[in-house]
Image 1: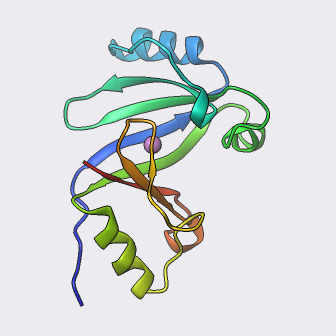
Image 2 (image 1 turned 45 degrees about the vertical axis):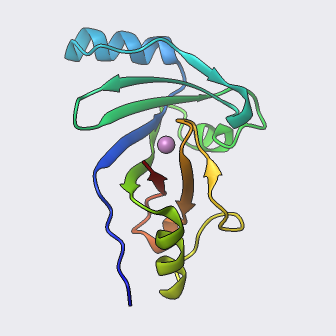
Image 3 (image 1 turned 135 degrees about the vertical axis):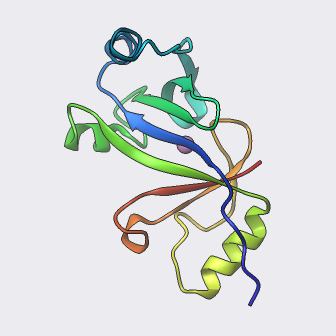
Length: 138
Ligand code: CO
């Protein structure tokens, strides 16, 4: 069996109730440089990020009640870590290998264009220690 390797941690995504409060907190408490807010209507979210060099923190906020993260925010009204994103060289190989192990890919398993313009898939938290995992082909 051919293994694929996860490479670096591309980002940690945190869903927050208020992007401006998160920005002030990270700037004030950590002296972090927080980006401007970017609205991604096709993903139903607003985002902003902190570039830490080796990885990023990505803040997410739902654009509406039908956003894929609005239920998550209702369950975690103060905000919470939503997913980890690992880089892979080939998303096709990754999906194939995970499927061979009987692990679940969310949706129909077809890679989609993610928030950063790269191909992504999400892996079900029930198979990964309670953590939603995003794989991104870079
Ligand atoms: Co992500």
